[in-house]
Amino acid sequence: MTLGLEVEYWVVDESGHLCDGRDLVDCHEHVKPEFVGPLLEVKTSPHENVTALGRELQDTLRTVLDAAEATGRQLVPLGTPLTEHDTPATTDRGELYEEIYGENVTSPKNCAGTHIHFEKTDVARQIDLLTALDPTVALVSSSPYYCGSRTAACARAQAYRKACGERFQQYCDLWPYPDDVDAWCERVQENFDEFVDIATDRGVDEQTVREHFCPEDTVLAPVRLRHELPTVEWRAPDAALPSQLLQLAEGVDRLMTQTQTKPVTRGEPGVLADQVRVPRFEELRSLSDEAIHRGLESTRVCEYLDAMGFDTERYDPLSAKLSGPDEIGRDETRRLRLNCAARLRADVESLDEQSRSHPSKPRVQYSAP
Image 1 (cartoon, rainbow, N blue to C red):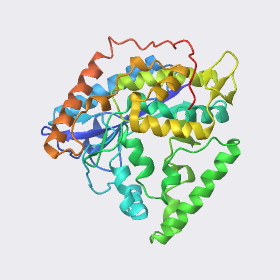
Image 2: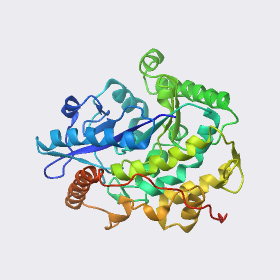
Image 3: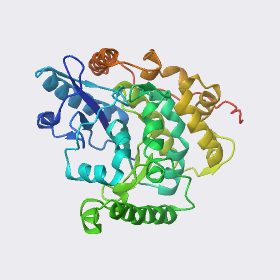
Image 4: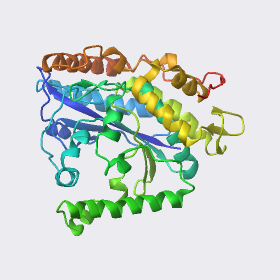
């Protein structure tokens, strides 16, 4: 099973202010613009293992960091820019999002995430497993602030899923386990039809929507099927330091590989010899909410992640390091951005020395609520 990675990073100037970074896409073919100017996407090719993926990510990041620094800019590995920014969209599709989402476009403009693409094998099992791994957001959460306020350990996930308005939450929030792949695809089509209706209500005609969006484009949920690639895309994690993301990718990939030979069943969570067991959705929803709000401070979340094979003691999310007041000012914001930019550069350079082998811990008993 191959996998690939996409990570979004904020671009700041030497003072820590957000700035336009679109010209940096010229430095490497795997650097792409996002729909607002201060946000870039750094991606990899598909690879058969995380070690090869990490080498390419490191090489690409070195190139773009050098290009940014040559022009007095840096990249910031945070799930949100900490305080609100409202630069206009810079792509046709982005402008349509502004028209269709209206004031609710604030959350996608202020969120940066990581997307991991897995080659399709047993798609139903893959969807179930990636859905069940949503609480792993606690392992790499990188910002507790959204639009200047301390909101959650993983402020990006909270904002992206809940601050988009009631009408759009169905596109952005965690979806339940589907009965089968056909049922998933039916929901995607139904949501797209409703998206067209919403757009029409906002003055965007149906033909324009269909020219710029296909049904899967409107799914911004943590799990998405991509037909053209073709992959199962996991969109749950924050933007974060590459070493942390590679560590997480390795743990998830290890579990995804097991879905080729083991069924994914409901019950007491754990990785067993003959199956991977995940919680029922109601319990998972509660775990995900707790992971978003409390992160690794939650004993319940840590017990669940340990049961699924993740050694929570090996993770050190950035979000927990951004201590500060409930409301953060712009001067402190700029200082934290620059601090995290320096962490990113150091992390990229240290990847050569870091081991990417993190064996699973023995299964422990999971304490259900």
